[in-house]
Image 1 (tube, rainbow, N blue to C red):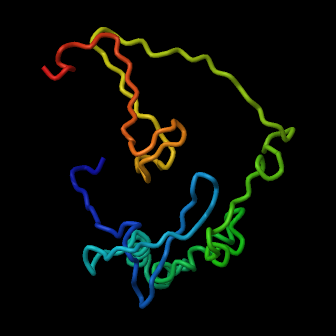
Image 2 (cartoon, rainbow, N blue to C red):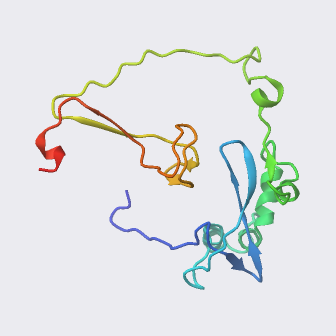
Image 3 (cartoon, rainbow, N blue to C red):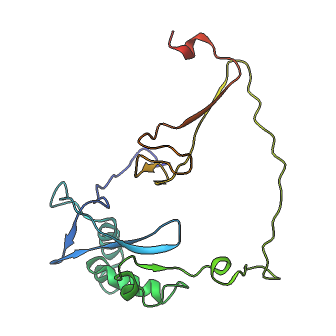
Length: 189
């Protein structure tokens, strides 16, 4: 809740070139397979005044906390490598972050079950549980609509027209529905 006042700051998208302080910058992303890699934009920004999220947040922090703050916010906003250095010193699996992310394809994060067949449990084994599932009960006139996540999709963004999970090529219009009773208003009347 904003109490009636909101401030929306336009920022660069991941597809736009992030050029400031005389250099092009990149962010890093982790994909669903635990691979960390560079992400750089290729499109021109909509305006020379649009800044990255990192630059905006670092600028706000620098203004709020002042130039003598021990974090050095202005330096972090000017050079993302400095942020990655802090991550490398803090987060397991990110040693030599800046060097490793610059290799083609980036680097793979450690994953105990994949790498060592070990789980972070008291006995090192996976602990599985089952849960009873009760299918939703629809009342007359109710409709359940479900979209299905597919291959080449991340969250709501679809990156391709093929879905190898379902053997579909050239079409991503996959919708699952369940009708108990479909009143006339759902048929477009």
